[in-house]
Structure formats: structure tokens, C-alpha cells
Image 1 (spheres, rainbow, N blue to C red):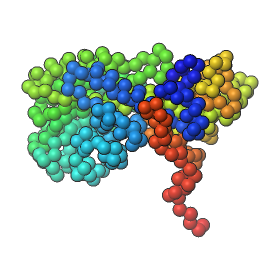
Image 2: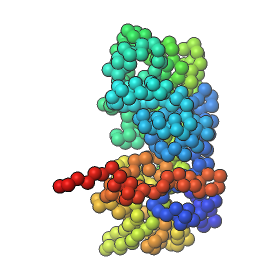
Image 3: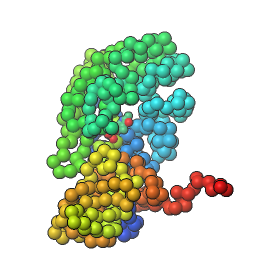
Image 4: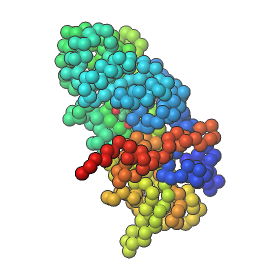
Amino acid sequence: MDLLNGTYSIQGIPALDIAKQFGTPLYVYDADKIGQQIKNLKNAFSGADVNVKYAAKALTNISILKLIRKNGAGIEVVSLQEAHIALKAGFTPTEIVFTPSGVDFSEIVEGVSLGLGINLDNLSVLQKFGEKYKNTYPCGIRLNPHIMAGGNLKISTGHSNSKFGISVQQIDLIKDIVKTHDVKIRGLHVHTGSEITETDVFLKMADVLFSVANDFPDLKFIDFGSGFKVAYKEGDKVTNVNDVGAQLTKIFNEFCQHYGRKLELWVEPGKYIVSESGTLLVQANVVKATPTVTFVGVNSGLNHLIRPMMYEAYHHIVNVSNPAAPEKVYTVVGYICETDTFGADRKLSEVREGDILALKNAGAYGFSMSSNYNSRPRPAEVMVINGQAKLIRERETLEDIMKRQIEIDV
Ligand SMILES: *Cc1c(COP(=O)(O)O)cnc(C)c1O
């Protein structure tokens, strides 16, 4: 969403028109931006046989998944439910990689029966997998490289105390199981967390993987996970994907020569692909000037976008109804009955009750982490594609919220 000729718009459609047509709160996604981000990554890694697996948990709407497939990406899922949505969206089982954490073995068995690619992240699971499938179903292994990286502890997944992956220090135990049951290891995987801005971290991860990869002769791919950070505000540090791509493909190709065979290089971005495509449009219900702070209370809250409260994430906010007015300082808050701040001390062009505000970069972990807290329905979702705004999810109703509740005599 950009300010063009004084009007905030998406592919030339004014955000205000979209808000009027579909109501607020509303998630709006720009299909062009998603296509562009996939293209950027493919270009950045074009030095190798790159396979982009979109991490579906960032934004899981079926129409978004269809769009992502059309743009030539595969998909990474962390639950069978995400796998089923991906299948409905047209992904073939082999385009899907399932990387569950801590699930019951029956889910892995179902993943196998669906024909998904599977990355295992636990020794006991690998053991069961080996006993059941032996050499009949090649799988990948998620390793924990013992590297501390990522924007904050909640999204760091590759350090030594993280629940994710099998420790690289347990590589001999992995090899024992693989040998005993003749398991075919087709891929090695790491995902050290979200929001990694130093190229060096990716290179260090690669070194860890390369140092163990020679022990697995049946590899098809090495999966470097994600961690690609985008800018949430001006001047934000971001992952330089061109730099990571150039340096990683270089050492990857050198490794492949050493390994004796060309392998596929996989990456699994979620945030990088969909974050900037998304905007959450809300309405300013009330403006409340106290002696110290002027609050803007909007018709949304942490039930719709939890990132500010959960991760202290910054989402840029603009007043799309009144862009030319002089700026004032506001604290933008939600309507949930607990502290529920979208942005403190923000400069916004003067806000009047009824104005439409836009929270930017809301495509990733926005709708997908939303809830019905306070018994509020979740927003509708709209995709702007080929210059047209199309509804891709209906707004929830009270009926949806009551659907599974059972009223008994008390
Ligand atoms: C969440 C996740 C990703 C995507 O992370 P982003 O920071 O959104 O790019 C990739 N791989 C795995 C295994 C994940 O769990």
C-alpha cells in the first residue's frame, strides 16, 4: 500500500474504497507484492538449483496458497491441516514438505500416506520411522546447529536450548539409527529462527550442515530454513537476500563439488514473502485526549494482530482518511479488555472519529495468529489481484463463534 498523488492505494485502488466496499476491520493483500518477493528470492539464489518452500503458517488462506503456487514456489507446512489446505490449493504432495515439531507419530504416518516430504526433528521419532519404513520412504532431518540468532528469544529456534531439531552433537546417534534401519536421508534441514539480519549467520549454519552432510550419501537437498527479515519501519535493518544468496550459493556449489553431486538448495521463507503484501484496515472509533496521552481506539485489537503485544513488533500506522492533515502524536490502541497497544507515541495526520487507519506489513502472522478473544469475530480478507479487490474470506459472525458451543441444563 503506497501513498500516490495524496491517496493511499493498492494497485491503484484507494484503500478507502476497499474499506467502504468490504467493511473493517479488514486484511488486504497485494498479490503483485507476493509475486515480486518470490521473484526476488529466486533471483538472489539463482546461482544454485533453488527451491523456495513458502512457510504456510505465516498466512494460510487457500487463495494466497494458490497464488504462491502460481508464482512457482513450493510449500512448507507444520501441521497436517496446513498440508490439507495446500493440497486443496493444488500443491502436489511432493511439492509439500512437512516439518512438524513434537507431534504424535500417527501424524507422521499420515504425512507419509499423503506422500509428503517429511523432515524429522527428534531421535525417538527417527527411530520409530526407521523401524516402520526402513529404506522405503526417504526423509529429511532437522538439525539444531546450536547457533543463537533471530529477532528475539520467542522466534529463535536454533540455539542449544531450543526445542527444535536434533542437536548436531547427536549426529552419531542419528547415524546409528540410519544405519540400523537403512533409512534413506534425502535432505538436511535447519531453521534457526526469524529475522536474521547478518549474512554470517547463514554461512555459519551452512558450515555446520556441510560438516555433517558427507555422512549422508543419499541427499537430494539441503534446506536452509528461513529467517529473512523485512523492514517494518524506515531505516530498519533487513536481511540482504542478494548478499546471502550470492555468498550461500557460492559455498553451496563448492560443497556440491566436494560431495560429488549437484543438490537442490531449499529456503523456507514465510515473512519475507507475505509480510509487506498485507495491510490491516481499521476504523478509529474514538479519540480520547487525556492530560498526558491522546489515544485512538480502533475496531480491532490483539485478537486480530497480536505481533505488537507478543513480540513488541512495530507496525507502521497511517491515517488513510486524512493524509494531508497536519500530524499529531497518538497512541493507537485496540478494543480488547487488557493492554492492547498497536503503536505508542505515533505521528499520524490528524485523526477524527470514523477515520480509517492502516497498519502496514500485516501479511505475515497477522490473520494466521488471530483469535476470537473477547468473543469478537475475526476480520474478512481481501486480495487485490489484476487491479481488482476480491474477497477471499468472509467476515466471521456471532454464529461462527457459537457454532461449537453446547448449551446444557445447569
Ligand atoms: C516458521 C517457519 C519458517 C518461516 O519463518 P519466517 O520467519 O516467517 O520466514 C520456516 N521454516 C520453519 C520450519 C518454520 O517453522
